[in-house]
Amino acid sequence: MANLKSLAKDTAIYGLSSIVGRFLNYLLVPLYTHYMPKDSGDYGISTNVYAYTALILVVLTFGMETTLFRFANDDRHKSDTVFSTAFATVGSLTAVFLLLIFAYITPISDTLGYADHPDYLLMMAVVVALDAIQALPFCYLRYQKRAIRFASLKMLYIAVNITLNVVYFVLLGKTSVFYVFFINLLCTSVITFFFVPDMFRIQWKFDGKLLRQMLGYSWPILILGVAGILNQVADKIIFPLVYPDKADANVQLGIYGSCVKIAMIMALITQAFRYAYEPIVFGNSKDRNSKEYYAEAMKFFLIFTLLAFLCVVGWMPVLQYIIGKDYREGLGVVPIVMAAEIMMGVYFNLSFWYKLTDRTIWGAIFSGIGCVVLFAVNIIFIPRYGYWACAWGGFAGYLTAMLLSYFVGQHYFPIRYPLRSIFVYVALTAVFFVLMLLGREHLPVWASLLANTVLIVAFLGHVVHHDLPLRNLPVIGKKFK
Image 1: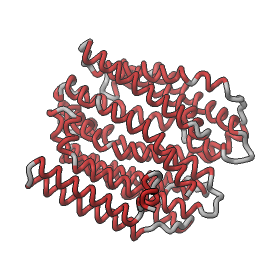
Image 2: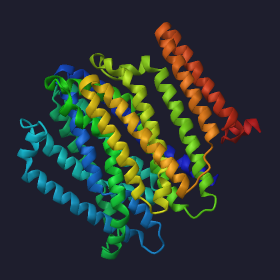
Image 3: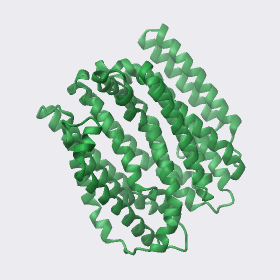
């Protein structure tokens, strides 16, 4: 119970920085979709370029975030030495990456379709390099349980980002996608500067023998990470390459990319949960009750993500105003993408069996197979169904990886998950989802919102009755004892 309370507290702090920060970023979506017309394709360009940067960031960090937790919690190694060795590795990879980009920017920009705008790629190359440099200091803050500083830096980035976007887009009238990338570069540079004092507190020591051990652990994590991020961004990379109407590709990708923003509440919850959960799992892996803890954590993760799913679907008539009117034709993909994100979160929860048993190669296999499924669905069906194939491709890929991890994991590291309770929650969500769709089709907007709210409250009632009695809650619980 103490671990669950710690998990809840840290998730709240990390979640606050992620959710509030991403909510403020949501304010940029109507800004961009208002000032960047759909037919310009600028939002599609932004979606495409950020997909590439997300992939490159995973490669540059080389799985060292998870590896840092694994080795820093090993009593045989000093945590500062683990950090120093990991940081030197990531820094070296980042330096090589920047040299290659600046040396070959012309052929790279020609190949990716940005021959007229190599500046877009140069700016984002520097951004992703700085993000890679920041990744391990942020990770070390999590290891040190310095959640407040972690959240403060994340929020500072968001504050500067929002301010500059308002200044450039609203006050100065700079509406090109160029300024989206330029502002990102400025903000990332500011946050990098704030890590300088932390670097002076580290007792720097590079350990070559330790590095070989860390690389042996991290390279399957790298493959796992690449496959995992491809499951998230491959559709946005593939789309302009296979969509038959090249002139319209960025327009359609902009519609899909803007609608997916609404579905990203699931990514927020999963990310916040991961930030808090990963240090606790590795720190308590020797606890004899750890398996029961993992099972309970899985159930509560699903409960809250399914609740979030119902809230977003139920209040879609209001949430749709997050994006500009011209982009709303793609809102139908939101529930599909959200369901895929839930499965990705479940897969993350399941992944600890191979991380704790040092069988990380299995994660690479599962994610690789899921990625192949996603690629196949996108390449085969995008030419015919457009961005709908992107949504279903992610769904199929995560479903495949999730099921494989569960069944193989039960052989190597069996955990008695409360499957019956989980199934009830999934079934209840599915029934309520169908009822919400029927209400949206046959009822006025106000009546649909009212009915959906009643269903959400009913879901909460089920949670309170079966798994989270009010008497167990702090402060409130005192009134029920």
